[in-house]
Image: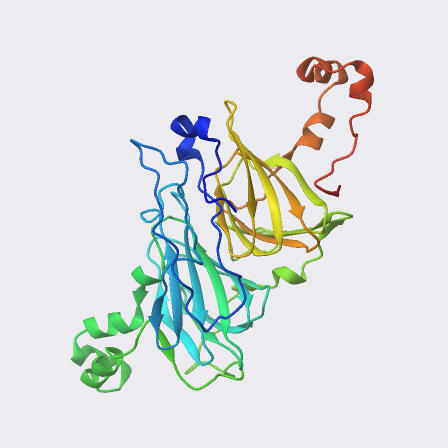
Length: 388
């Protein structure tokens, strides 16, 4: 794929800020225990001189290595065309764990790309949930709730996480170990019934992602008495009954389906070979995309004549501002699987078929420059996803 933004060269000077790019990444599931080579340093579009080749590949980011896994991150500071959604790819080795922490300004929505994990969350009322996350599951952690992720089983785990403020990632989280090191030793001794200086010393040696013996089962109970959270932080996105057609399937989980996720929606689009997701736009949300498998051609329209076509494949990351229209068409003989995150509490999409269905024939003819006979042939059914 050509590494470029979603705009044509002629539109770059006036429209560069509208688009990020889908950037070619490595295969999204292979070799989880091996660090991926870093891609060339990205050229970032600036306000003074918009660049037509600005790229950002999450899979191509040089990983930060820890004893129990690796971390790749992207914030708005790293790539300004994505202003309000930050990203992280967390690879946990067998026995790896991202320790207890919380985020001060953003909620987190994660998707299990491969493997299994143990999610632990403690909410604002000190209720807790300890649950297994399977491949295809999503989880949602509201801002300020403490949580951790641990690899479950004998295979490594990969999680892709999205944060809804553009600046929050794992490396700037509030870690419990850092917190304990900052508290006076006598207070820790009095409250926790363990020597405070010993706790501070041990906490100071814990990395962001630790490495221990494999966890082969979800722990049966919390350390002490704690009530269960009233709503689950986990949702089995892959198990939802999809909207299905000859061209593919679509599922989305808004707060109506997954009450814990109040600020972000997760969706999974599967396009079969020759499948098409109709041209559409989202009036209430920006769209963050991550290609799980397959290849597709995406057509994007940003108004004022600005448009582009780009090909994408496994590991590619993309961003579409709200109201930017786009369509997706599968390339090749393999199904195309796309994870999308929307920063809204309800799913809204206006498609070209529904748009034209709702417009009187006489006005359609005038709008499109068609004859009455040609207008009569336009579909009278919403397509959403179809086969070519």
